[in-house]
Image: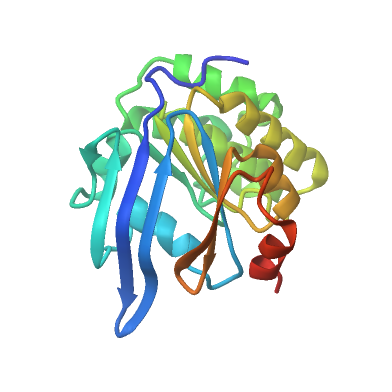
Length: 239
């Protein structure tokens, strides 16, 4: 496995996080503590608040109350770009690559936005998804969903983050690419802190060191995936 990061992984801490849409409270007192280099999976039904949580962490939507810190550095009042420069990378649901840019250009834009002009960071990221080399000059919009997901994750890794947020990376993806993503997440352990939002329970339990389950914006279960009650997990995430 190539290096994929230059800085050490960071502890991601969230304390008492609330978020409101108008009068509706979407997140209620969320607390998370992700050890450096560990993978935490956040599970829950659609509408449980998982994506809202990630968007609060990245600064894309404001939190109503609470604290977000990366290795003790307060992020709560920082803009999204300053959070990204602090070492937080985000792969949103739907991927949001640049469809008119080639694979190579997507990666270069991300790296340069973080002051990484050399190709090392891009080479390290692409080494994790070698299929991208054969698509180097193809526009992102012409890729399959699975190829776009690989590009989106590689693009995030090309910024050399200290913590990586992934929003349902297996959604609508063929099994062979799901396996490739699983291998990458496993290889990042100890090198990059990962917060994974996922509905594919088996995948999440295989890659995660710890699990948090959200229901109606609150944490209702947390712990080691090896000892959590599978029936309780299924009850909270089943549609």
